[in-house]
Image (cartoon, rainbow, N blue to C red; front, side, top):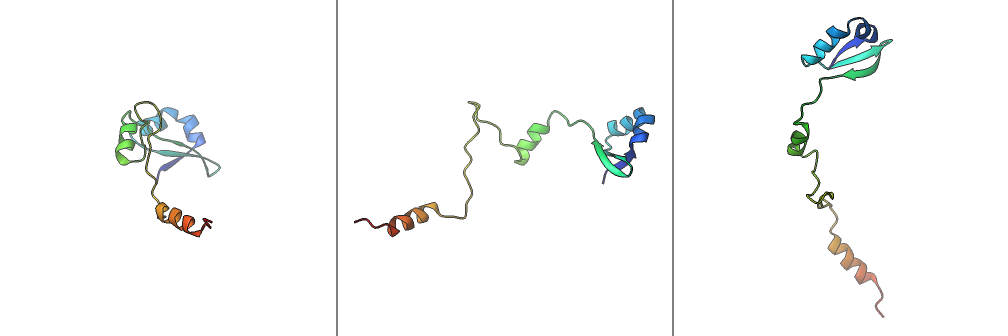
Length: 91
């Protein structure tokens, strides 16, 4: 869980607060005991590459369009179509 600092601490000791963040701390700023904001270190430039590697981001195709991603479904579409066609009255 991130450490907390009050907004007064941020105002009175800004350099010290940001030095903690620079050293890797994630801080929740509170006002009146309630969370107001989060201060965290700036994400490194490789964040995008890491998200792609983790599967959280799918890069666009070279032509700039979103890639076609097969949908995962528990429904057998071919069976549904066959069933629908079987129910029709073809007379």
